[in-house]
Structure formats: C-alpha cells, structure tokens
Image 1 (cartoon, rainbow over the protein chains, first blue to last red):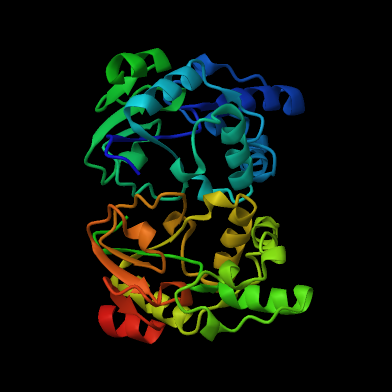
Image 2: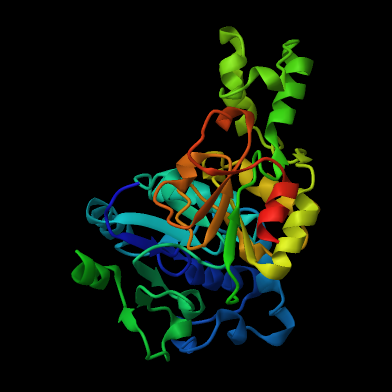
Length: 176
Length: 176
C-alpha cells in the first residue's frame, strides 16, 4: 500500500472490449449483424431480435466468455503509465457472473501483467476507497464522492451529467 | 445500496474454518498431527516439519480446497442478524489464489445464501469504504480508519493492540 492517489479502473468496455465480442458472436452464431452506430444510448441486447435476446445472458455465464476479449485501444500503455503516478486498482463487478472470475483474473495476468493481484478487486457494489473512478456505468458512481470519469461506450452516449473520456489518449491527457 | 452502516467481514478463519481443514489434511495425507494449542502466535505452516512445509501453498492453490471448509460456529446466525441492522459485505483477499475464486463464491452461495452477489468482494488489498471491519489479519487493518474487530485465530493470539472478538457470540454482543 502506498500514499499515492488511488484510481479504480473498470474492465468491461473500459479496458476489455466486450461489445466487439458480442458483435462477432452474433454474426457468427446467429447470422445477426449489429453495428456499433445502432447502439447509441442502447444496451447491446436491446438491438437483438426478441427471439434470441435471452441467449446473451447465457453466453456471459459460460466459462471462457471473458477470457479472449480484445484489449481496448491504448489502455495497456496508459494504465502502465498511470501505475507510476497513481495506485491503480482494477475493479470489476464480476461477481454477478461467477464463471467470469478466473477468466478475468487470467486475462489481466496476460494483458496487464504489471497489475499485482493485490490491486485487483472483483465485486458487486463498488464500495472502494479511491479518489478517482473510471467506469462506463454510472450506477457504479452512486455513493462515490471522488472524481468520476465516464468512459464512453455506446450505451452511455446520451448521458451528459459526467466528466467524460472517449479514449485512453484522453485519459492520459487528463491524468498524466 | 443502503444508508446503513457498512461492515466488511473476512472469510478464512472468521466464517470459514481453514485451519481445521489443514489439520485434517496433514493428519490424513502426511500422518502429521498438529494441535490447535501448539499454534499460539504461529502460522500453521511454521508447525509443519520442514520437508513438507512447501506442500501447504500447493494445497491452497488447488481447485476445490476452499469449497468444503467447515462454517465457523455461530457465524451463519450472527451474520444473518447483522444483515438486518447493517449493510454487510463479505471481503476476502482471495485474489492471491485464483483457483479459490469460484470455490469461495459457491461456498458463500451454499452457506450464506442471504448474502447477495452485490455484497461479495474478492480482492488483494482491502481498500473498502466501510465503517467496521472484522478480520483475523491485522495487515488488512493498515490504512483503515474505521472500527477494527480482530477475530481471534491461533496465529494472532499474541497481538494485544486491537479490540478483539473470540467468538461470533461476542460479535453479536458488541454489534447487535
């Protein structure tokens, strides 16, 4: 533990590209093409035809789903640089999907090996004692009094009340 | 999320009897008998003959190790009662043992089904925003400014600087 300012960084849609995986999966398995620009302000499952909508939760619960996600562009370099200046924690609300826990651990060990296990938190409610939070879900900002950076994701595009970062380059500009 | 006072409750040696599992395991697999009263102020592995000491970490890393631990006496009833009065979080430094993550989730679902996934936190450093912490490891109290209740475990018997609880009945007396 250090005296540096602490940052909590979310995983899905912030450092891990979950939506890309959904798009590829539904193209391949269901012949259903969803484009990012259709998603503005919507959740991915809202765009699925109703008859296959329930499959999404089944996929998320499968072991392996979170293991091969693509890394969000620029996140590795910027998070590594943030680690020099801040005490960086990766905080994911993974507990809803118990089969994701080991996958998410192993994904972090592969792509963010400079993050110690001591700085990884899998939880439900994000009741973390940090000063800055980077997250794509405003529900995780409820009750948090520190600086909130809303990381842009199609589902949150219509939200205007928060300081927003669109890319990891913008995070670097603000915090480095 | 509620406005109740938040409590963080540890798992191993607080609600889950890890030492009992060690004792049974070394009796069965290594013909080595360790008694609780030998442990005063010591870690379990310090009591093992040197030639088998390294096996302990191997056992802890095995899938399944944390799945069948006994429940600490009285913990279910008292934690359930605490849930009425407080916002109770189970907080375990499980991240050091990635194979324990799913086991610990499933153990909680079996023995503490009244704890929502939203109130479970697996981490390294316990940087949780709570007011009360019940833990058997004083290293988890470092940097925590709330009320610290040291749950008695043989390895911490010689520590005198903290408010101590010896049983779940004592926790109930103090907090209910």
